[in-house]
Length: 347
Image (tube, rainbow, N blue to C red; front, side, top):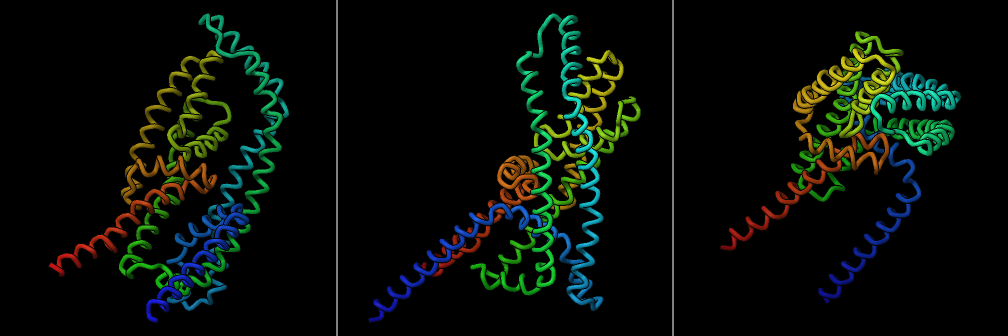
C-alpha cells in the first residue's frame, strides 16, 4: 500500500514537471524575441537594486516613485548618450550609402595607385561590385535593427519597473524555488552580481577609455572627422578578439593609400602601442576591481553571447560561462561533499 502511494506520488510529480517544462519551452519559443529585453532588465536591476533599497528602506520613498526616478536617470545617463553615438554613425552611414558610387570609384582609384607602386592586385572588380550592392541594402537593415532595438528597450524598461518595485519579494521567492541550501543561494547571488556588474560596467568603460585614447591620437595626428572615428573606436572596442583594431588598422592603411606616410606611421604606432596597451592594462585593472573575472571567460563569453543574444550578449556571454563554472562548484559542495560525509559517518 505504501509502495503504491509512493509510486503514484512520483508519477504525479513527473507528470507535473513534464507539463511545466512543456509550457516553459512553448513560452520561451514564442517570447524569444523579448529574451534580450529580459536579460537587459536583469542587468539594470543588478546595477540599481542597492540604490532602490536605499531610497525605499532608508529614505522612506514609495517603491513606485523610487523606481521611476531610477528609470529616468538610467535613461538619460546611459541610453541617451548611446542614442547620440548611434545617431552620429547613422548619419555618416546614410551619407555613405547616398554616395556609394563615389566611394567605390575612389577606392578603385586608390587601389590602382597601390597596385602601380607594389605591382600586386589587391582588389577584385567583382568584389567591389558586391560591396556596392551591400551598401545599397545596408540602410534598410539598420532601420530594421533600430526599430527592433526601440521595441526591446521599451520591453526592458517595462520589466525593469516591476523588478524594482517587487525586488525584495522577488529575491525572497528565489530562496523558496531554487533547490539549494540558503548558503549556496547566497553564493550564487553574490557571484552573479559580481559578474554582471563587472561585465556591464567594465566592458563599456574599457571601450570608452580606448575611444578617448583613440580620439587624442586622431586629434594629434590630424585625422579627418576625429569624433566620428572616436565613436567607431568606442563601439568596436566592445567586440571580442579584434576590438578597436578593426578601426585603427583600416584607418592606418587608408592614410598610407592617400599618400600621408607620416600620418600612417604615427597612426599605426598609436593604435598598436597606445590603444592596444590601454586595452590590456585597463582590462586587467577593471576585472580585478569589479569581479576578478579571468580574461578567457570574458573573451569566449563574448563570442558565445553575441551569437546567442545579440548586443546584450557582450554582458551575458561571460555570465553564462562563469555561471556554468559556479554551478559545478555548487553541485560539488551540495551533493558530492555531502555524499562523502555520509560515507565517512557510515564507516
